[in-house]
Amino acid sequence: MRRREAVSRNHTGRYPSAARSTRGTVVKFAVVFTILVAAGSASELFLLRSHRGGAYQALIADVVGGLLRACEVPAVVSDTTIRIDSASIEVAVECTGIRATAIFCAGVLAFPCAWRARGAGIATGLVGVGLLNVGRIAALALVAAYLEEWFDQVHAVLMQGFLILFVAPLWITWMLSTTRGGTRRWADKA
Image (cartoon, rainbow, N blue to C red; front, side, top):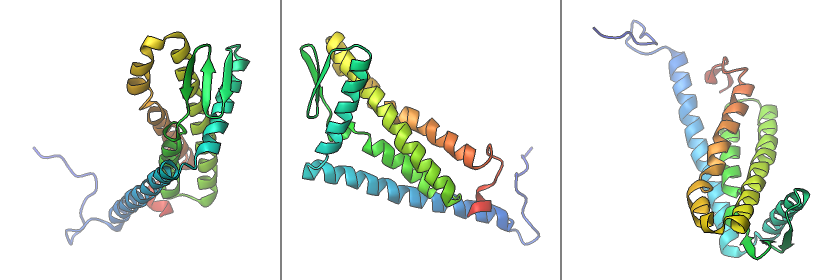
């Protein structure tokens, strides 16, 4: 027994225009998303090659150091390095969250919705990914200081995917909020 297709074909054997329109919107999203992610990755590569990320790295180190001191952890920040007692970590360009922010923003900009919703999404991404990244670096600093033998494993295994693990649900939440709980079809905003 064969299952029925969710979208039936009309008398000419073609799918209705709404199905083609939705498919075209999805393809457009995928192409724009891919191009924007590539541009975001290129910007991170540019910062790595040109050694121009220092100010942003230092800002993140200062914010993490301030957070740790607010939690009564004796953190000292020097440029892009955070020291707790005898342990130290350096905030490298790869640790700034630029790539995760670029992926989030690419998803927002590629998604078919109003520009006002995209603006709210960009703001959500910048703040949300920034806060997640500060928490991630603070956790790594604490592991380096108090569980030094675990640092390499936590850094390489857990924290490499941490931002993506939390950025994806953040983007999905934003996307669902722009489509009123997922009820509006993509083709309506294409």
